[in-house]
Image (cartoon, rainbow, N blue to C red):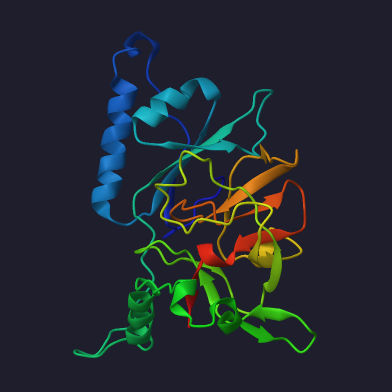
Length: 262
């Protein structure tokens, strides 16, 4: 701001001086507004810059200037602050012209992917498989029967992917009382056997990051006195689909309470 540079895009205001007898009449504000208006009409400059003491901030802001922050300029004992007013907006980046009737490369494929993403997969219940759980597993070569299909939320219209294929292992173990007795009759989920009867579960380890989508309830105390969390669909809140011990590394999904995508 100390040197004049012909043709530069910035104009610097060094002083706005009003005789003491004519102050507090809006003259300074009027001068600033008229000066900035004329610079804008000229169309030659991009911005107006100035430095001022803090008590003059309100005056310049009323004239359309914005506060930038403390200036590196040192002149006297008091600090100076930078302010500016932009006259021309930053130019928009140039966009290569498209030939009439052409589609940008990759746009059609992206639209198809987006359209497909809105189509929810159909969730098949375990009852749709003649041999039940045995039709849902594949031997991983290590003696573990892993889930052959993606596990989905069974609610019609949701179908959110809960777990990818090959992640869980099939385990037969005792049933767990997941539903309050009063709500079991109205639940859209398949009823579970009464403990201690056994049933098939999908075991997921070692942490919840293995899931594509899963939600957890607050911890409740089971009949065995353990603190467990119920597993639900994170998108539609349908559940309980399974359970886990609070802070544990094993997550159990009932094979009859999830859907399957072939």
